[in-house]
Length: 503
Image (cartoon, rainbow, N blue to C red; front, side, top):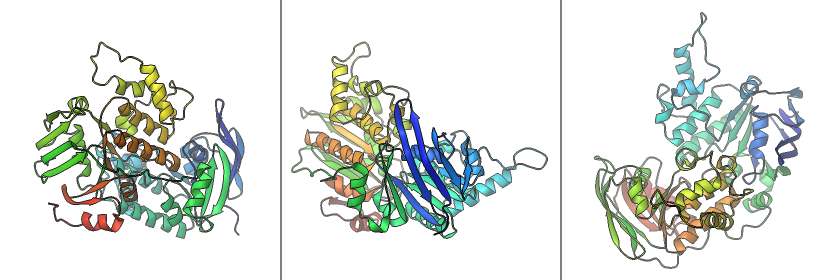
């Protein structure tokens, strides 16, 4: 076997008293795709940030083609041919796509100044490799989360590096974009590049990666060829225990309608939508990316006003309340509807505040501004314990938590608020396998207790496993309805590419 392209030898890194990476060694060959996986907090992202030049190790050695190297910044790592596509977006909203892709390494004219034609053409070429139609001159602030992820990937591709680190690259991508990325990674491998791939999606690891390294609690657990493993083996190594039932049991029976929409039109040009969400159920909105699921969910949550239609909410005392289609988030919250956005960091959480402050926003929901809810501390403590939020105490800053714990804090806000409808986008985006199972159980416990959940997810198996009923959306219309139990990805895709509206 040829000498490794990358060697990480006895790497350690601590943050205060926390040992994030503890004496870890890893080697990566040219022309290979090497997965690094484990639960959130396992140390994999810290290890990759050390290789990417974001942070420095306390101990250990990095070798590139046998030569010891030291990186003081991501640009320094890039100068040595190591490119990273970070899970946490590094884009600046008030720059164009092209400016973001080449930030810090802009092509310059011979007499000084940025060569903007070359910058735009280089950005267009990187986007073309991803088969993307994103405008290089468009502003980053106008991009969706999925489009931002594509730009992040294009940013890495624009530097013709020898080593590519992909940190959860598909977390915000739909199935079509995932296929494009898969083709790209296989092309990089065929060209002799080394790819380090961090993902919680097991099917991607088995489809793409030659080798998998598992980390837990900052330590190296095992490195094995993926051909020698199955999903059961890999999950057991990651979580250190068996996951007896990944998805909780479905609802036995459901109650009366709790949220109803009639003739709802998200925009003037959109078709009308009718749907009912029943007390005790988890309902999924399925379909291809950009077919209108997001607009429907956000209209029901009061995040974005709809053009026309009727929305009715029924409370626990069976009192019905009509909600105007432009009611706004304040009124929908008062009626008992909570909303968990896909972009939990940009739209949901206050990252610089403590866990207690983020959850307390739910406890105080609907109360007069001059009053405080009683027993707030007890409620927050109970919520942290019941949700298994892993932090030293309620004063821990939310921005320091793993993705799974951040998601549980955001869900906990609404569980503590008393809402009985939860509308949630991408419930497990960037969440590890163990935390996914915990999130699913939280949502099912909420519905079993008399609430109801409306879920959007790009992961069709997640919708099938979690939900009781599915509505398939195409062109802004609901074109099919089916029980999730027994549904297949083929059934959903067949409906999603059709155009016959369901009766």
